[in-house]
Image (spheres, rainbow, N blue to C red):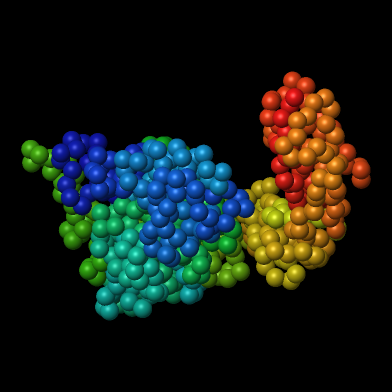
Length: 614
């Protein structure tokens, strides 16, 4: 977001907003696009699935409402990516959104339902002309030239999730772009049709020391362009989450998000957590609201939230447009040089990037340089993190984040850690001690069935904290859990017999520990059961009725229950399995059956016998 946007919103009426001036934050409205009254409009809902529910599960609540295909719309790649965090994006008619949401909340497969929020862009010693002319003071304020004495960067992949990126053959980004994806138009051409993403990318990786243009922070960095914002700078949380998952799968080491707003979502937070669990650093702009109101995704745990210092005063004070507060991790200059999507170079004071905004009376309400905002602070810090990754290729996202925050200058009380110092960040160490674990639950040779939680016992880490716990079943990766209390699920469906299980524990710095192998017995075969002594079906009964059940299972029987009209009236754990109930004070019609459990938890029901109480 640019400071221009904050000033427009404060200084003029809504009628005076001009085309191209994006709003400062997400609105809390649940409907985006056409209005709810439009008969042809749709609403996008985010639906989270409960643990253990398969991603392709049919939602019976949608079937009952005649919307069976609602969760199968959209880009197949996007659907596959959201399945990684057990989520679906469902499009429903706007007029039925409330009824569908209510029905989905009652669906036993569903963990949460919410309208899909929208995020906005957050703008504002080489021989490159802008650098040599002193038009990039932000680099010196970050101590980037001093860092270049150690490394000018390596081929670290930085994903820019934004309006896309455009790089002409003569521009400073030529040869720097990897093949990316456009989640707005669902194609392989993430071209920048707004300009914001190109400017952000130039700060990270514009080729330095080539005699033209400007100098980016990381000379050899590669940009993975991922378009998640449209031509007006807006994008839904589902598209941004898809972009995060995609960038992680494509090998991005760092993801820059110069976007955000006041609304949060489980889908976006889970996508960030998933990227963190893969060792990726997510850097996000803190916003340009000039207050301490929390902005997402910057405020999510393990996101490096970046506020803006005022480049014009030497980078020692907060830029008046920058958000602030203890949730903002670090600060970096927020008034910068940049290259636009036409290959033109902008710097503070240059008329190329000057914006004049007038109100409806023709009075000037904003007249200043366009490229300013935490949108441009964030990529500078992403570039610094890339320099750290260049010097320390084994560093995870946690290690990169720690290097940046631990080395920050404690000169910005409005952030948690202070102003970024690139040179000092290169000297920061990391956690090198593997986590500890004492064992696995369940016990050796325990009977398991269906989806069984496998949990580590005595799990501790001395510094960075646990990042993930993975199941290795019969020597192959099976599943993982990325959130405490860490209980990844072993799916035993269709298996019977021995399964060799061990856990791989990884801390946030990437250190790993393998447990010993635990042998479990998978039993997914239900016990056999029959009633061998009881009144015949259709009989009239009175007083005490006794039923004898015959039950058998290879794992052994744990208990036999007698059910009358669906309620348990007797339980037997002995081999005799004789169960009785008194017919007194019961309903006239009695539906009786036995329920049998084996020691693995499999269950069998005998056929129902219907009696009439006499």
